[in-house]
Length: 395
Ligand code: FEO
Image 1 (cartoon, protein in one colour):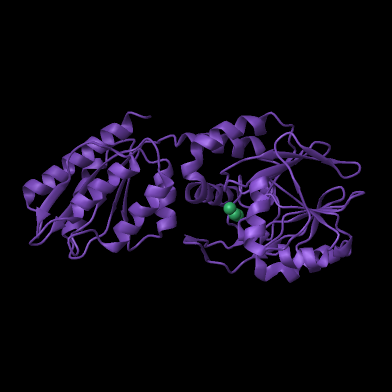
Image 2: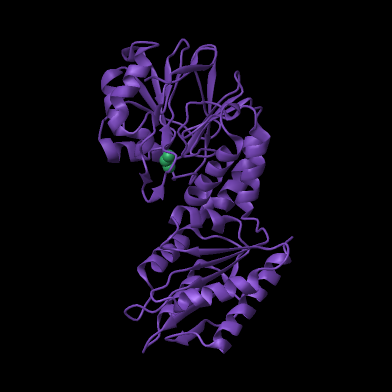
């Protein structure tokens, strides 16, 4: 089935909807994803981005509904990650006269991946390219999401091809923000930001004003739906997320072997449950890392617990903290906890990881041997209450 649609006069959506993908380098894509590509029919025919390698033939079929791919003059590669560039070899074989437009790092990345020896035109912020009635303007956006990333703007149509920014892993029959469930859309947009862009907040904060300075009637990202009715809303959300602005929310993130660390976690939650503060108990073996990460984006406080396994953390807790070390959630307070048998190590390892992530600790790890006694559980309740007080203060 083809989802090809004209999104503005002579500008066509030619991307691919991947209803079945459930794992995107570790990100659990429960709603699938899309790889968005766009075809501009002007004096110079221009393709904006491609799709994942395995769907290259489908992309060519979509393009062929509109024009013979051999007539393409330019292929703009806004980002080298293979979910967007994977079909470059197939497209360039079908469009042998096309010039590839990319940033300098984009060109280097494409050649390192595909060694196509294609003809390139390297662009940077401020550069533009006449394609007939329209002019493509380029805005390099390094690290959103890779060093090569850039956005392409059509001033005449007030249309921004924003690449990964403003995207969602979200496959639907709708194409626009007003054709899908609003709550589901913003949930997927937040999940995408948290799991893909959270550590890039400082860069996003610098880039958003440049985007706000443009007149925009449509944002066409490289994943998910296109924004036309809720542009101010999604830009406002991005500003909030880029700030990692905390809400009055406490998370108790843990795993447990024989319920001792589990009892400690429940006591922390009990202490954290107070009026106006949201508190959540997230056992890592019962929740997707992708969802826990989304909760981390706007949490104010987090207690992280692990029992001791082989002198260290449980693998689920270790995976969570390693992911957080990369994503660097900013502005959180927290503490470590955990039980052990004959020898400690789990809570201490969690405590060290919180330091590496940059979480401001509000006390030493709470530990217990074998099973928490009443005094330990009281200590856990007090920790929960202190975390909730910190969270309440951000209201
Ligand atoms: Fe959707 Fe960074 O690629």
